[in-house]
Length: 510
Image 1: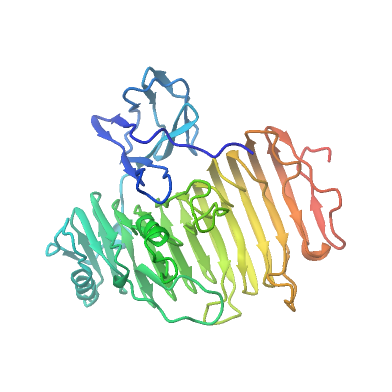
Image 2: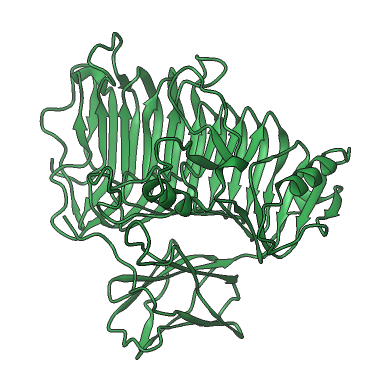
């Protein structure tokens, strides 16, 4: 197994010059000897893309031997000059700069913002009564502004001022968009008393508190280049070291429940204690050019469970929902980036998870990056598409794990480039409990096309790894142009199962 990816050492500054601006990269999750575990500081910066301009990334005091710039769009290799890395970004996008095989910085170069389709004709309200930087939560003040904005019949844009605004749970309202200024951080208080806890419900246990709550609303969302920060790593630290572990209810950053026609554009959603964004029993939810950054812990980060390599800090979790569109996402997550689920908590137990499209993605996760499951309590997962994806230093690139009786119909994963991945993509069926009466599920139709998987070592012997409870659990698998370390791959020789079919990789002799 390849060694776990690393960032450049804590304390190393990263200075950036671009299009007449000079600035330092921001640092999330700074390492601290008093912390519960060694942390991985994340360095990131954001700017407007300017065509033809060169980026200079300087690491003062560090002689850079080799460098790379990794991005979805083709980009010429960088030039290294002592402690400086230079390259010219060809288009807006997410650029990952590496120095001597370590992550150095995430650089987000944005296109010109355009919210006119969401904002035209709406009333604008300035939230100028808030006090940025105040040390106490302003939950009541923020909620009053949201409620006031909801009373405007034409719909409202509520513009938050620059600075850090501390808050507990906010209940969002129909017709209201929060415009989060470039320099605004809407930050969750670490005081759990500011997060009302839902009563327990039947079925699978899921997070019952959250920072932003979209419940039974429509035509609303978040716009702007600011950040919503859950302060989840601090709450996780306190749970480990300060006696809160048994009594805590971990919090989502965003919960979308029984909603329709929501838009999230350009915002950064970061540092969630639990799943970053949970979309439950909803439809017509759109994300564009959003950044999800949760903490990725080191090995043995949890002294209570030293075998844990994840922290439940997922990215976006569609759950019994339909018409989900995610375009231009950057996700760096302590668990699965895009797990498509059905937890069985929809109003209608027959509701499937359907018509989800995830496109133009840059993803980093230590676990399975994109996944169907493992919660698969609904009847069907239908028309799920992942397309044009870059994965970096991650675990399994893709997984299907059926445990609760669902059927997968028309799953397509196309144009995937995974660099330094660790695990094999997989297709599995396995009953959740030995006494379970029904079958674990059926993988009805899956197509994997145009994959380039790069491993530090030899890589897996077969792609995908197929582990079925019954041979008939896989009905049809199509593999076209799948390579591992530049060569065509094999499939398990015991397949196809009776009554099923597998199309081997195009051009392969297998």
